[in-house]
Length: 111
Length: 112
Figure (cartoon, each protein chain N blue to C red):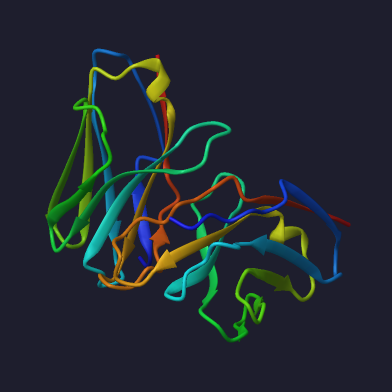
């Protein structure tokens, strides 16, 4: 399986934008890029996913590099409730059911 | 009730006890999963059921026994567990063929 690399931790001020990076240099053409987050004492929560084009939803935006070797999850205005571990995961369509969660990025949001 | 629910939320059991974890999904999905999350470790996939058939079993010890009686319910039967089995057990569901999974809040299990 293609691997992702994320920083262990990041810190942001409340109401500032946050850019969470993910490197996936061995990504294949059929791998989707998924982002999940896990708030303290909760199960993981789906955030967004994309293949080639940038994606927006009510939670976040996903910017995908042209060569697809990296992507960035963008939280436009961080709130204290966005403090969580964010996971970047590659998932190949119709290849099975596993989502390989790594260690993710622990985001700290300060007032 | 919406989404994925799990009961109990917390469970303390001795090594000789038998207990069961329950998961229910209200999303109309046809695939369900059990994951284990130990302290300071990534989530580990344990079992996958699709259309009520087990499709993956990731080398999980036999003291963990899953059951999927229908597409909305998933159980994890526990017996003669070890203290190192203490962890957060998470249930998830998805629609087969799509990789977006929806998770429950988890059961925090402590084995004494």
